[in-house]
Length: 164
Image (cartoon, rainbow, N blue to C red; front, side, top):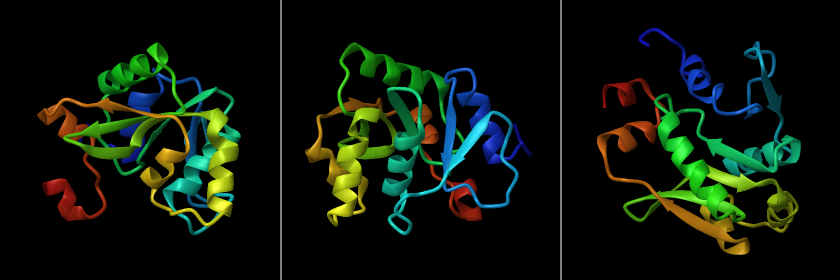
């Protein structure tokens, strides 16, 4: 998929899996891909935690798979395994973890935590996503340490990240 924008790669993985796709933090004025809905942070300046809160507030589904927009090599198979794990034993959050490290932007969140998350933010809670985990029922989905997993969790923030 060389030459395909990151959003195109991402949507090619997500569209077969989800009936609703929400993007938090989409630049105002930029054309939105067809079938995608954008939400604005209710708590600007907080970062990804505010995006999660806004998406939870807006979503119609009782559960939301949250991922980083800078992860161009998401794996549909990994997402399916994680969603299956969540559905077998639902919790407020099913956070991905690899080698003991959290990956909060490859996790499943229950819509029911939105009021708690909003209260946490309004109460001055840390903007670090995993600092919120102790306030709700959080389980962990341990990902295998494989090249596929590492690639799927790769963040691309600078041109040199692509070379990595």
